[in-house]
Amino acid sequence: MLTRPFAEAVEAAEKIITGAPHVRTEQDLIEGYDYLAGSVKACLHLAWAYERDFPFFVQSTGPYSKMGLDNPDTLYFHSFLRPDAEYVVTGQRGTTTDLSFQVLNGNYSPVDVPDSLTAFDDREIEIGKDGRYEIRFGPGPAGPNYFTLGPDSAMLVVREVYSDWAGERRGTIRIHRADTVGHAPPPPTLSTMEKRYEVAGKMLLSRLNTFLAFPKWFYLDLPVNTLTEPRATPGGLSTQFSSVGHYDLDDETAMIVTVPKSDAPYQGLQLGSMWYISLDYINHQTSLTADQARVDPDGKIRFVISERDPGVANWLECTGHRRGFVQIRWQRLSRDLTAEDGPEVELVPVSELAGRLPYHEQARITPEEFATRIAARQAAVATRMLG
Image (cartoon, rainbow, N blue to C red; front, side):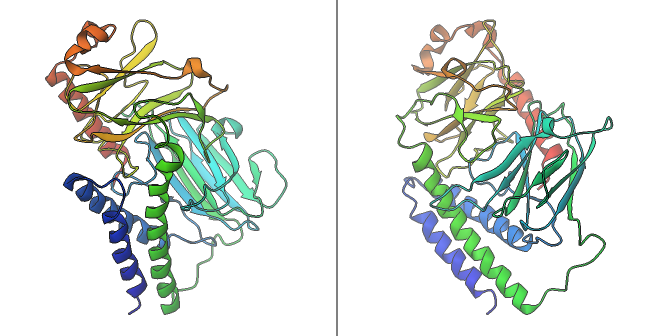
């Protein structure tokens, strides 16, 4: 059977899910099977998108195909490249907080993070008054709106980042190879189909193994219920810093994360499950940007992470996850961040929150007001993230 390699990969992937070291409860396993379904969908999609001569952008991850502690505030796109060819990227800049481009020398693997060969945001390109732009990637010398591809260049990643989900407008983007535009690829053959199913299976196993290894590399060796100082994101953009940690909270305990509202255009905090993917950010408030969060009079944002509803605007819902990951991102930076820009963490009983949370009275929110916030999230995601 032509599809046998992929079927065997799915069977092996199920064993990875059931054997994951963090699986302790039925909920862990159910979420693992859901993660597997999204990964199967994504890998079939990506295998069929592996086209370097007639390229197109594909959505790398989304609410129904999550991976790599995906940022709820970001739309991710990528296209595959040949280092010796020239590619033209055209688009119209939307009103999102950030738009960035990154060339990688490969894909993430269970033992390595791909090198970032080129990384920049739209401040480094010329954009017309109408928001339209054209940039080129190729083997030629760098110049205005032209970026040289290194010999190992394999993938172009584009990120469109929202801070105000409801108030910012998507841009448009497309890619073509300069010497194949106007022509057509050869029709697929049985050999092509066989190879794609095989590639999809390899992608699936690599994807699962890679992002189960990531937490060990960057999170789980840190003391629990703490966050690091801001640091450059490994394998990420030069204009992005992050603070990371993992939590373990019982139902009666809350984690207060206090961080100054940054001068960076984008600042956001999110929670993730032990599968190293975002929690449900559509129907629950499991992430907040600086624009979405309530800022206290002293210029600081105080997030409250807990299972129980503390009745405050900046509640981050654990949604039944006693354990998980926390990440704060700052993007579109114009300076390096220091410890003073980073978070402070305090654990308090939920019952004592009113006396331990500064400006608690002003931070309070009614269940009806919180439901309105959730309805706004649902509408915003439906608008910008189609399945």
